[in-house]
Length: 275
Ligand SMILES: O=c1ccn([C@@H]2O[C@H](COP(=O)(O)O)[C@@H](O)[C@H]2O)c(=O)[nH]1
Image (cartoon, rainbow, N blue to C red):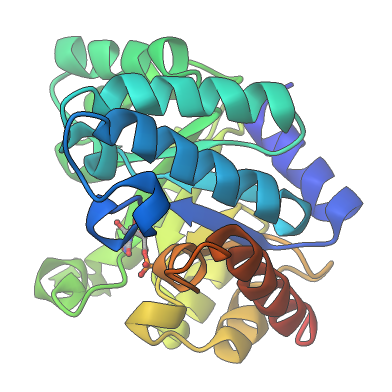
């Protein structure tokens, strides 16, 4: 099933807009998993599997961030193993590979194979800065999602993304171009930081019911109520509200998976309160 269909089904069936971010940092693992060393790849897999299995009931998507795997020897194999587990154990929950790819077309074609065929992700995050030809190898995979950076969550988002281009801020031009010209396959989505709720409102007005991936609640300080009020579609969906550290490290003790489940449930309920 294609990414957007799978996501819409999950929103409806599980009644959740929460995306569980999988950013495993061995320095923050409980002692039983080992902090680092020879078995780090096994620890990455075991930690993320436990978190994902515990939080699945509250998740509309999982989002492993590739940097947290690729930083370690054997980490990419652990990521491949993790996504295979997610696809097998939780087939109704889309997996977003957060890799922020973008390059000339021939290289982008390899990145598309990496994300969709090697790793088996349903969707991948992409940087649109290099333009349409850099996105084409991803866009033509109609069954997979292309989630483009639009207005990111970090303070430096303002440096370029709010510069005016022909009278409108660049992030609005990005939203308008992707919604109007790149989304012929119906497989596009955008990244919009929870830390910029007013900009989120403007973007929602431009893109209609396009799915939006919203990082930045919890550790980065984004406000859940403002996100839901400004970003949800008329039917109360349209958002994948990501939390990574706030769920992964809810506890550093042996009960970390149960603590993660409690944190996920609490955030899912907090989101639903405003829908
Ligand atoms: O604008 C962006 C785009 C991506 N991210 C990623 O989301 C998570 C956020 O983690 P938290 O621990 O919930 O803050 C992380 O993987 C980032 O790389 C983002 O934060 N902002």
